[in-house]
Image (cartoon, rainbow, N blue to C red):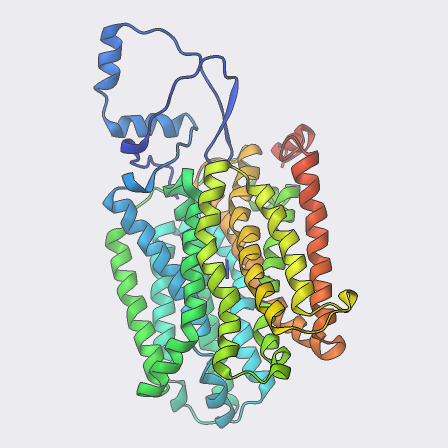
Length: 491
């Protein structure tokens, strides 16, 4: 698929800042650079006074100094666990809302007189609207409020899901098509609102574990993509067209109510730093990460309309074809949080992205198989390549959000919801564009030049990313040059 307040976060139990002498600069969390003060000797009375300070004061002091200290999951408070659960549920519902109509809506649409192009438009409009609306919501989230946007987005998605269940009562013809399109647009706006705000809230609440939090949210997003179609199909068989949408809608409305009580209220104050989203888009590495997110989403979504036909020559049952899809999506779901924990522990974001890009090239060349390999199509090798693709795409996608935050921090952006909202909006927009571009253009490409050459072209696109990442990892001592930072401050 493809995710914050200026008040202090209560991480007192897990904050233990060690004073280090003679350390001029140190990196904390996801890119903040802090001047370390030398450790001065203190008297016994001063030490006792320091130990008597409350945990909340320690957290506030740490936050105000710009230091971001990692929070261990074993020490999270109930409030923090509740926030994490709601963020996970949001991403789960986001992908279920998108994918649950796949098993039965095309047949219903055909019965209502819609052709394949109109049905495809109903599916594709979801990602297209998210591509347009996500950066707008990210930019203005600071004025709406992160919590308010999250709750409103969940509620709007729930209401539109219920409305979608009434579409079968509309007469056949053009009216049914436009009604489906309109409800789908509204659902996409709600979905974009709470997914964009969920990434921003996660970045602010868990600053030392951003990659892990993104991994957790991607796990639930992957579960939604995987479980959405079978859940939708099962509920459709049990209760007809309306039941899947009623169940999903009611569940989302309950989640909106729970979010009001479980997610902390934040003080979303605008920061007049003179930069904004346009200044952010002048950072070169942001565009590299946008490119990475787009090609990652494109590589995954391209297989949705094309892989089944590619496997026709093996005469597989629908169950086995479904398992082939599960190889990629299921392994991605499992690997995502593992990549996140690895990145947070070893701070190796760019190296892991480089590995993911190289592995994706091999996977795409084998899935085809590429005519350049002069190899016969093999079901076993396709299965291995799909599993490798799931691992590789997780390695590519999970670090991107954190690297974007690293970049804007090094350009002097504040640790605020205004910053997180802008980054999250760009991030979600890029993923939505890739998800729309992959099946749309990929489908045309398969019809024009065939599946093997299309996967070869996708592999070549990833080779461009490899060259960009290789330059970032091995040639850059900093995310930005000093001269470029000066230019940004003048924006």
